Image (cartoon, rainbow, N blue to C red):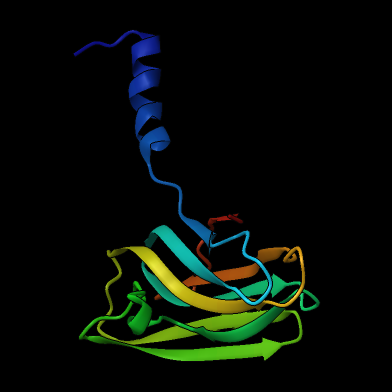
Length: 158
């Protein structure tokens, strides 16, 4: 089959354009509550291939927000970690400091190097103690594959 130059370029570039962009984003629920109300924040991944280890920090205004808790998931809130399964165990690290909470985990168990991961990898719950509630931001995201190689991704705040 003989293609002219524009057709060849389109057929060559199209698969690259259509490939999903690995993304980590912050999803803030109830972003405008009053004092005493709660804000739930999830860290979500989309189209990440071969994720083995991750770390993400959520910064927040500790003058207007109080961290209630942070975890890899919250089954009672129907928020399950995207990487949890029967054949893999998550080894979590949650570090809480003034104005920053860090959520990290390493997977053990069967390797799923071809798996594309989507969903929640961490959750934080805040109480509003000042009006208006200050900024919540996603920072210092690091993703590693099963070979220890860094996974490049787009990091997006809500």
